[in-house]
Amino acid sequence: MKTAITAITAQEILDSRGNPTLTATVWCGNVSGSAAVPSGASTGRYEAHELRDNDPKRYNGKGCLTAVANVEEKIAPALLGEDVTNQARLDRLMCELDGTENKTNLGANAILAVSLAAARAAANVTGLSLARYLGGVAGGRFPVPMMNILNGGAHADNNLDIQEFMIAPVGASSYEEGLVWCVEIYHKLKSILKSRGLSTAIGDEGGFAPNLRKDEDGLKLLVEAITAAGREPGKEVAITLDAAASEWAQEDGTYFLPKSKKQLSPAQLLRYWRFLTTHYPIVSIEDAAGEDDWETWQKLTERLGGEIMLVGDDLFVTNPDRLTRGIEQKAANAVLIKVNQIGTLSETLEVIYRAKEAGFDVIISHRSGETEDTFISDLAVAVNAGFIKTGAPCRAERTAKYNRLLELSKAAK
Ligand code: PGA
Ligand code: ZN
Image 1 (cartoon, rainbow, N blue to C red):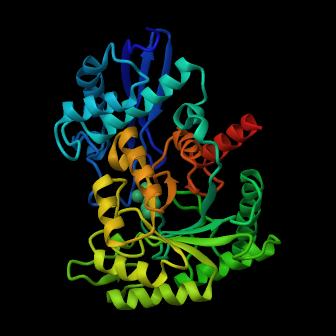
Image 2 (cartoon, helix red, strand yellow):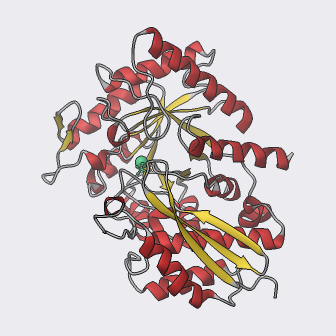
């Protein structure tokens, strides 16, 4: 059987924030597939376990040698001889071998590396692109980028509390056209910042990270840049935000914005979002409330859900159970998908299809700590995701994903 797994190897590598992560390679005879695992700076409390060595003398405790050893010494023996195209079984075997809810034994990073590498190996064995292998004849729609061109929060050392200010070319007729518009806007934004003596240094995801008077000025800048690039704000290019408000949530249920040092009650936070969405062409806010504040999520969805996407990232952590709760309680109307939040491809697909069934929008996402791996580009096309978040058109780990989409798009013509 040419699809039988004959070897699995792993290796520690670096992510774009200068921290270690790992890559795994799954072999079927002389055909192989590799995949690397990303890592976030603003991780959700309910994400699957990212296994680190915790050896303070090496990489500040962040080494991934234990995860590498788990792949080679524990996962590999369990999967040898298995059919690489039986993704659901491979993922189930790894989850059973781990035996915990959060993948704490083997590490979600170790399991995910193998899970994704197996899919790549399967695509290579069958001679299909990864997008075609994953999506079959049902996939093939290209996502609209949510391009993060202004960085704040935990991703930048500036004074903006909102983590991501993004542009989405909702009026473009193709992926390529949308990409051109966004890149042109990115350059216009750079010129505007320069002309005002503001910093054009960049944050973790390649967006600019200037100090501004307040977060609202970031929205003004985006509208200005969109207009300067000859696009109509709202109609052709809309704004989307990721507040990453779990970073603001306090034990007592209030919100503290650490950069502006503002304290907000949930009701004030709601009013803040309402104010911004009425004055700016915002079509989506991610993590507009904290990961434990289901009540505010429900209120947000009730009040703003008819007009904009309310995207659960830390709220859902790509977890089927948390998403089901969100669907039942009408908290959010869209889900952010990050493969390493849950740790296997099968569970990721389960969440995506459950979200679609419930009428939720699906946004496939990178992490702030990325590698040159482009798996998420193929995944987005395979599942017909409405959107993809993969940063600014700057820093090679971000452009790699945009470039992979260009490649897939050309191949589809
Ligand atoms: P993270 O940020 O990768 O640092 O978690 C991305 C996001 O919050 O969407
Ligand atoms: Zn987020």
